[in-house]
Image 1: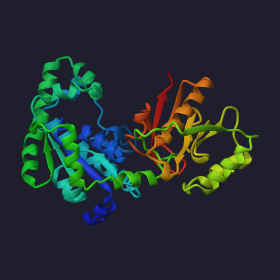
Image 2: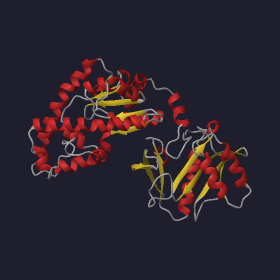
Image 3: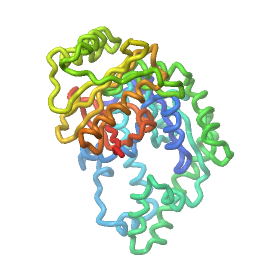
Image 4: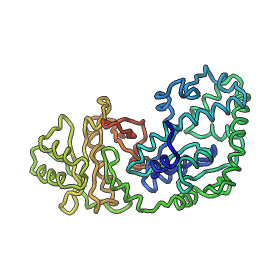
Length: 389
C-alpha cells in the first residue's frame, strides 16, 4: 500500500523533526526543547528493538541481519556497511511514521531521527524540520566518548583489531555525512551548525522560533492527560500554604474529597476515581492524598498496586496526579509526589513508578526513564522509576 505525501504530511502535522549529522546535537536540543515546552520526545534509536521485534526478514532484511561479533560487523567494506545503514534506516522509517501518526493525534511530538533531504520533503513541511549539523571529523571517538553511547563503544572495542574497525566505521560515516552536511546547508532548510559556537540555549531558542513554539505549548501540555497524570508543572513559587492530606476511609474528609473528584476538570478519569472512592476499592497500603490550599482541595494523587497497565509485578504506582488549572505553576504537584514517595518509603518500598507520554516531565522530581509500556487501551507510554533514598 502506498500513501501519497500530502496524506502523510496531514497526519504528521503535530510532529516536529530534529535530524542532522552524528554529534550535531539532535539529542541535546530535542531534550532541551521537550523540557522547556513540555512536549514528548520520540527517539527512533530507542525504538529500534521494538520495531525489530515486529519486523520480518523478508520485508525488512537489513533490520534482521545478524552479526556474529564486532569482527564480522566492522569487517565489511565501506560500501557494504554504508548500504546496510541506509537500508536499515529506511526500513525502520515505516514503523516510525506509523508510531508518530498514533502518538501525535492530540499532542505535539518532537522526533529525534535520521532523515535525508528527500525523506524530509516527502513527510513534512520545511517549518516542521530542523537539522542539527557538525562537520564530520573523527566521528567514532566523539561518539564513543558520550555516556549514552557506551553500548556502541563497548561493541567496537571488542573487535580483534580495534583500529581497523574504527577506521572502517569512520570512513563509512564520513562517506555518508560529508556530502549530507554540505547539501543540508545549501538546501534552504533550517539548520544550526554546531561549529558556529552557539550555546545550547541559543540553539534551542533559534529552533523553537523556527518551529513557532510559544508558552502556549506549556498550557496545551497542562490540559492533556499524560498516561494516568495531568496538571504537571513546576516553578519556584512558595508552597508553604499548601497542605497534603491523606484520605482515610472512615474520615469525614472522604466525602469532601469525593465531591472534589466528581466535579474536577479531569473528565477523562474522574468517574473512575470517584467510583474507587465511593466503594473504597483500596487494599492494604493503597491510598489517596489531597492537596489543600486556603481550606479548598485543589489537587490529588494516589499510591496504588496497579495502574492502567497489565504489569502486576511493578508497584507501587504514584498515580492520578492532578492539580486544578488555577493552582498549576505553584509546585503543588511536586508536594503531592513528595508526599506519595514519603508514604511509599514508610511502607517499606524502595522505588515508585510513574507512567507518562512525555519526556522531561518527571526528571525534575528525581525520576528516570525505565522503558516503554503498553496500556490496556493499546497505547504506548513511558515508564519512569524513582529510587527512594
